[in-house]
Length: 195
Figure 1 (cartoon, one colour):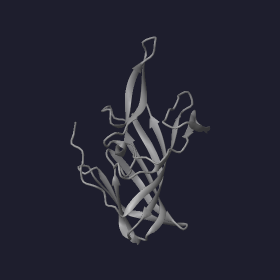
Figure 2 (tube, rainbow, N blue to C red):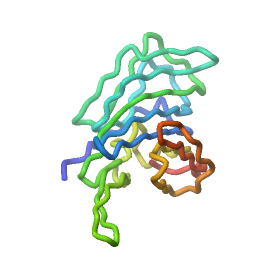
Figure 3 (tube, helix red, strand yellow):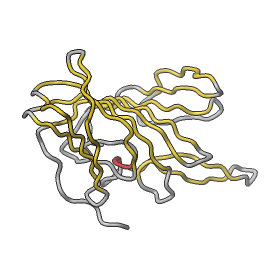
């Protein structure tokens, strides 16, 4: 197993709650995702550093008081398993939201958001997407503060084919048709916890 990045994230920005939507594709073994994170900025900064591994971040911006401030640059560090979002202006202290659009692979390494094979009673094989976030692999599923001290609430949604089933550690609160044979499965918000 590769070594785990050990440097801690800066502390001037912390997450309060995540709203995450993931759309796995079980034929290409990839997934697309979007998240809106309620954050608290305790010290003005022009950068937000969070954990991300094996993810491609396409877009990031901060929302505060109806104003949208896009990240001027998004830099990833594969060795440190981080993404640094740099803004043109310093973010003031206080509460705001961070939006991130990203994509990743459903790896076969039993880490993060990954694929696994199982057999039906008739012997036919199927593929499922599942997760393993312990120490520290949530960063392979979505950009986050993937350290035990950074606790937050999680509101998870999955966009999946209508004939599939989604399971989470929280109960389903809604299933909404999305057209093209897909549905949006939304789970209840989690209690405050680590990633």
